[in-house]
Image (cartoon, rainbow over all chains, first blue to last red):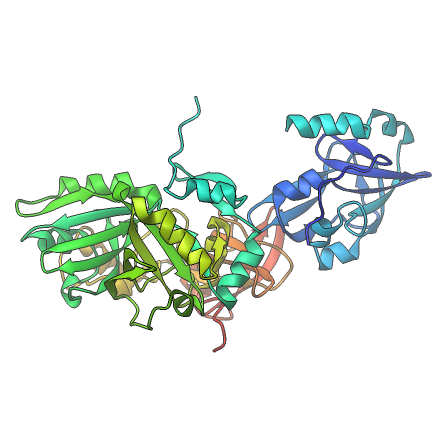
Length: 131
Length: 350
């Protein structure tokens, strides 16, 4: 079952419809409810490799629905510590729980100061309203 | 400036059902309601209904209607009687495919052609230019709505008896008159109902009332691809030919029609590439335009809801066309393995 629209206020957001949950010097990344709804049912997740370095504003993976493929943009730079294997096996997990079981990767942040440039929930909701 | 999109008679029904509407071939069409995958599975398991009113309908009439169509369409119309229909190709002078369509023989001197929405104007102009005295081609598309009701329980839900594929008859559903065509584009049993435009909404309501699930263009594409049915504009085009596409079966090369000589020569020397169906062996979804290593190209690709893996069609060199041949597909820079399969890619076990 698809989740209903929500944007948790404990997350940081990127205007390309990605979220980050900051946990010390690590961060968990995923795509927002808006992104998964626009794509439709996800059927494929092409993740980065663990150990890869990802860069803020650059694509680090791909998610695909039946009809479309979309880059996943990194809201923060860092090193990939873990890929969510559940989403690799069951991409629809992102539709069901985009902020929980549907997370995409965990990273060690390269530059924690980048967090300050991310959007808070109010600013991100404004992006959604204008999309 | 944005072009105004055409709307089918069922537009308000789609909006009321919460469909996601998208532009398609100049029309505003539902791509999905509940979701591509549940709609797809409904058609494989039970019954689904598609609004395909965007498709074009031409009437070709007159004592020389057959002569006109025999000279422009690839298949032999003398093989069908009134009440029968035929899959056929409109071909250009090079043997390229202008469109694929179904010709319905209404009577001795009258045919209905149902053509792809994207090609309606090109097809009509092509036929109109070749009209001969005693033949008249009219575009009657705006007068009709068209519903495809497909799935193993489609006929049962409509209360229709089984009938031979590629036949048709005048009929009615819940008092609404329509032409019941035993045709479809999903690989399932079912029919297509041609109805006067003003009755289309009542017919749609009846079909839904009888339990068919509304399905959008998204599921239509995944269903036809699982069934290995080509899509004009993707798998067959003005620059591809029937022989390479494996559609020689619907070309009567013993008669004369546009491009027949070119097709005879091609058949004699053998095509260099052929259209094949494939399934991915690795996790990846093939897409239109992706290169096949060794020379070739994906012409359609998607995720198969029934097989839960990537599937597609494409042209590859003849040496790689046998079932079980291994292909390497360039998926945005990554080489992914696929295997050629016999058509159709998916067929439900009875």
